[in-house]
Length: 255
Image 1 (cartoon, rainbow, N blue to C red):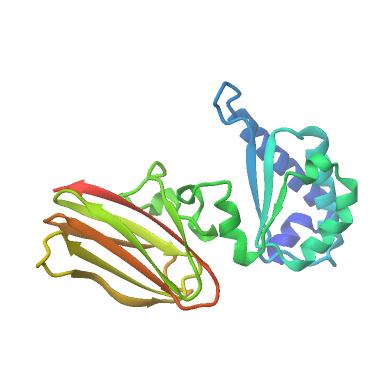
Image 2 (cartoon, rainbow, N blue to C red):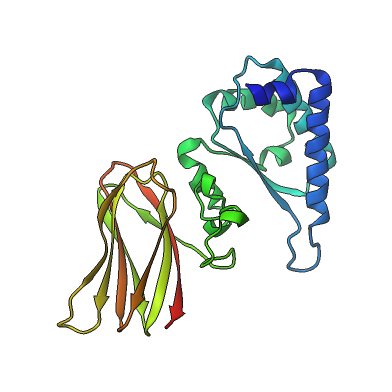
């Protein structure tokens, strides 16, 4: 509510919000590259978490003005406008303003509730580029894991309800392997093992089966020094009735 009052409580503040939004859009446009193969459109994310309800007429007014400005002046620069953590009332509001929008503008809008926000973003942005708070692996530069960068690609796996999913990483040389793993929302059991190539060698438990809870750290980082050929197995057991999105990446450092 405090943020709402600072942004929308009177006409002057609403005008300031719109000016700031347009200035940000203009700065983004200057970063576009219209040469062949360059990034020539913008993907914008609007987080609706904790947004006030339909009773706030000031918010309705500012939203209508913003839609009109973007539609009339920047129709082709924005590839998609993604609204995540969308509450039910916003979809009701959208049905009200929808008739005033052109079909072209409506086609650029994407809506996702809290449970599907990460899954929706991954359709347009790779997980290593999506901020941690939205389900990805990207963190603030000051807190980043030095073993990874935005250039290190992540992989996605769906873990079906009531099933186990194992990620297999083949090791071809003596090395230290580092990995990051997360399951959106967790509520799973996770374990990690190293299985040597030698038939009579023992499996090494890197991480005992651990019950991961929703409030645990969103990204789990682990490492293991390997002195023989084999494979690392990352296993996720999903006991829930909902499918889960598993995201992981790894780096190998020769010893």
